[in-house]
Image (cartoon, rainbow, N blue to C red; front, side):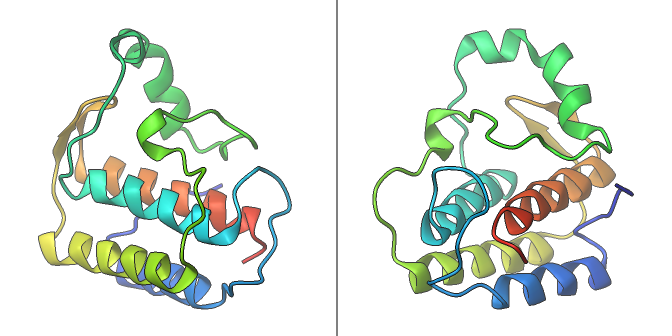
Length: 147
């Protein structure tokens, strides 16, 4: 998987097109979330990259040196990865509200512009790393739902 950057206009447009292809009836090919929960999950993750506080258990910060290279590698994420509690979506979600939330979060990312950030789990991230990990995460879940 070649590293794409969500800050790049063509990659951003690709993600928006894939997002628009989802419907309330789109079924997952793996995992426990339905499409609305997946959108809520992706929006919450994206919101963290836009500056929302991240609640990370201390033990996960300890494993940063192991997790960071895996998360930033070109290898796609494995199916059914565990996630932190903040990103778990178990309650029913409204598809339209969550699609709008994710769309707005992506717009916010672009409005903020290319930037480095200090991530509570990932540590210091360059603009290229932020653009890559945000794309990789969305790509993972959009493939989960066939788009």
